[in-house]
Length: 171
Length: 296
Image (tube, rainbow over all chains, first blue to last red; front, side, top):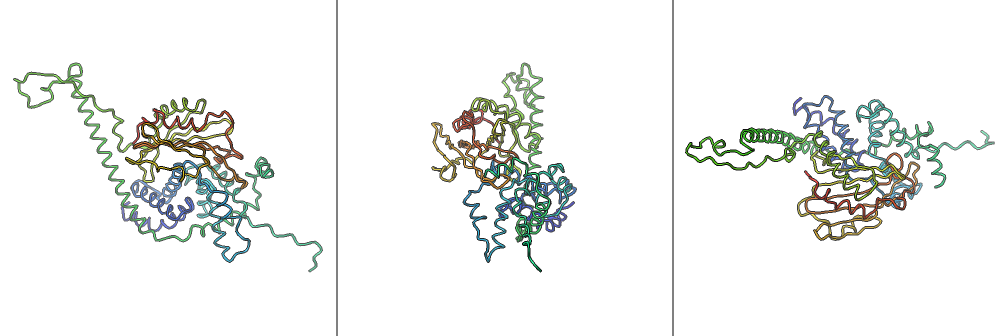
């Protein structure tokens, strides 16, 4: 495959790869850096890559994981920051959508990179557990356990159950 | 708090109710595209990636050529050396223009440099092999500085462009609480040194900075690791860390007290008498095994 083939592929694939990168590192600039690194690797191995989409996703996940490992520990947030980002928000606000988004970013930041990678492929790309396992080169069991742990940590995102109708209510 | 701990112990972490799970999944499917929007123009990213990719390919070719050249050079040296008596070589043998009237003299031959001193274009497998070899050296220092700690494994550290920049050694001690020690050795820029008061920027629980007689700057103390457990309960642990900065080299040792799933455990503290102390890590990062360890 030629360089023109790469450019054609990259122009089509980059937006979605950026979205995945953004979810992995949760920062717009870092996501661009991560995407650039991934595209560079794909370009350098272009002649030997059979499935560039899958290869690029694997590179993204591995690179994000390496970044986390190099920092030596997960992203840390102070309790005050967490409070500011989440629970201290008023229940009713004209900017509820923005706050909700910030809260979700804060929640996602508390997850390990691998769990975010699994969530990105499962729920952003709507891929099956088998596809995620193949893309990340891990077992289906690991995909299931990582998904389960991530969802458990995010379980407060589930909508509150509808209140039961009061007894004795007449129609 | 107590209820949360019981919940975790009861295994709620892996037994999310189906309807709750479905609710979270639905929320994620709906919200994630919003979280990662908007997508900026990526033309510049693509151009930079292509340029960097071209440089990477060039480096690979040059590296392969350099490795081939050094191999040929080494082979020539060995071929020339072997026929000489006692490892010595006559100038007549060396020089094709030597005349018969020249008095033969002998001169010692400088031994060829070891093969591992020419690292360009080392493959990932070669780097991994080298890291595992260096782990032996690292573990000698670890056994002295942190007696009884589990041995470490080594791996190469790469930057985001894939260039080899150092080594990472990781030792997870299985005793309670499960604790992981990570030590990275990286090449730092020539003349780079920490700020006069690097502690101020670190925001650790405690931090001290001092300069040793040889100019090495040692920063050490107790970290401040904050996260949440699976139930959203705030967890703080204060494991020790130590950093040694010297010309061309940065050695960074830090520890994390783990619970399950690589997350800090609830109420994580190191037990009294644990060998993992700030002074132990200081000794480790300034040990000769680490300060003399080869770096890329």
